[in-house]
Image (cartoon, rainbow, N blue to C red; front, side, top):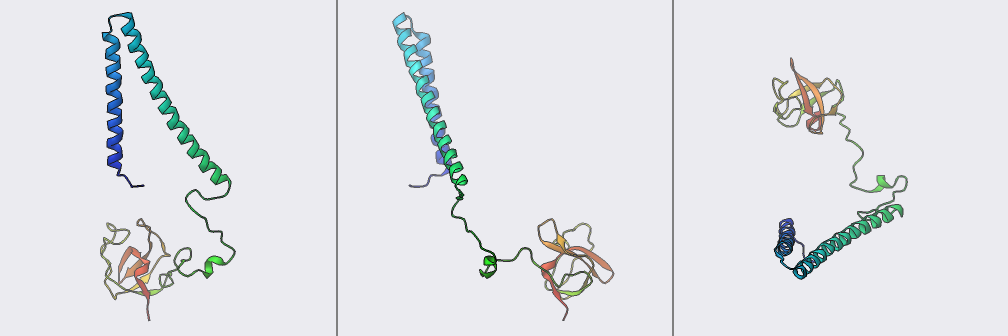
Length: 180
């Protein structure tokens, strides 16, 4: 089945709604302009048929939604994933798969009290506390880590360091290397 863009679907829905609105207006106008009882009866029947058609269409749409929800519920109750196949891991199985990273990275160089070297230039705007810092950190500078690593606002592991007399807060821990 060819994929359809959202704008094309939106335009089709708008067009269908416009056609329905025009048909309703036409039938309502015919009922208002009817002069004899026979014309009123015919126009009324046509308008009733239109309402029944719309109601049947809405009910069909609701039944389809209910069927989809029921199918999802049945799949979930059967233990199958709704989005696709699920992997059942045995104890120790994840450790054997290459490429799966462990929970959270360990930054041994960024332990509190260590002397480290910065592997790249970090401006004060890259730190987690840009307005509170007076300077950044240059590549190759020797730093002293003065805090445990914590998660910064950009969801990276960061630490506070001391560079000479200055304290720089929120330096990315991944950019720090142990002093050799």
